[in-house]
Image (tube, rainbow, N blue to C red; front, side):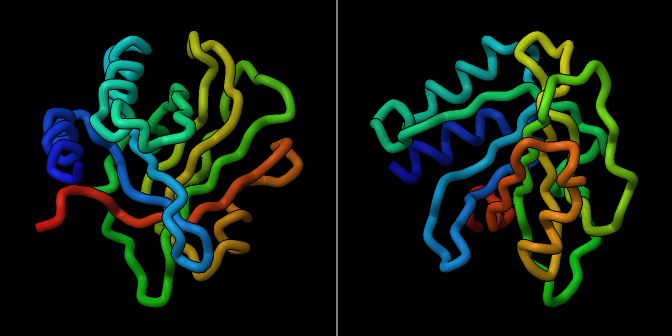
Length: 163
């Protein structure tokens, strides 16, 4: 189903902010992340649930969450790559929903970042960050532990149709 997946994703190329697979520390594939700029929640559901792999039963879970692009760029705009760094997806889930987000200050290692929002967009329920760091512990530190009920760190790499 690889070509069906890529053909489907090609339809959304203009909306993509970031994408790519996630892994455990030993390199086992755990899933993927797709961040898109879509017009509404219905379009996001359509994107996720009409994807050929999902339709074929390849995914156990799908998490849809609104997100605000605090840096206003895509992963393709990122130019801060440093030798020896790895790439990570860091997810933080707030202790309580907040009315406003505290955006991360601009840093060279941030690829994209922004708050996770409630379904209607009125509350901040967490944060999602793609970044480069030497290791998972350094990546975790991008989010203040006292602001989140939990922080997940996943190894991640740039995705897209192979050349």
